[in-house]
Length: 247
Image (cartoon, rainbow, N blue to C red; front, side, top):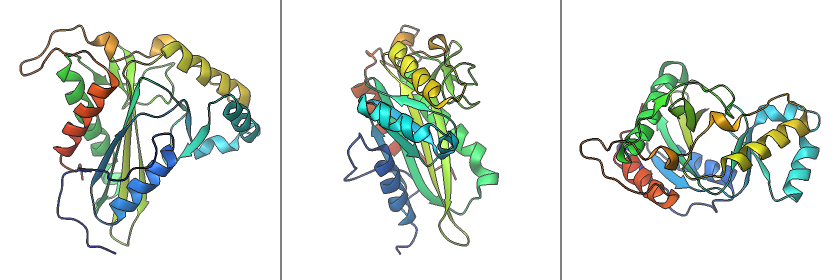
């Protein structure tokens, strides 16, 4: 195995799998990180769902997966925990992976803080003030959501895997609502949760798009740009590759 890289900034992933395969993207990132490379990938998923492995506990989960796949909404089981995340046009995903000597217990919060700050740097470019907070009624809710005016605009997650006796691999992920059809995402998410009998219900008023919040004042050094997924993708690539590895 290659020695861990001394480079402490992220490089963009080469030869990434198709954006429709979030699980393959995760595994590719983990393999590159295992080789000592701090790697980043920014991507737009096709319609469907990403769920944690804990969803397998629902008796009707497999049948629901088949049913929704037949409707053009495939379900993929991701590495990280949390809850269901619907995917679709107008959403942008950021995935980071690296190898570290830090422990999850000591560094998990620092990873979330660094990920939120990276996202905040991107939203500030559009004159949008976003803050970490839990948002009741949003899908995959957590205290390290990013919210604009109290509505969730991004979610974050992380996954740790042991690489050796003294090192671990970290996969950190964020999903941003840029210019998505919020009503459709919420309807699809509620339909899937109802199908598996989870009892979870999501509210469309709990989420918002970056594009909706882009009318605020532009901070010093910022620029007024139309917020679109291609713009956000390029911006996240630039910020990620200039960011230091969190731990």
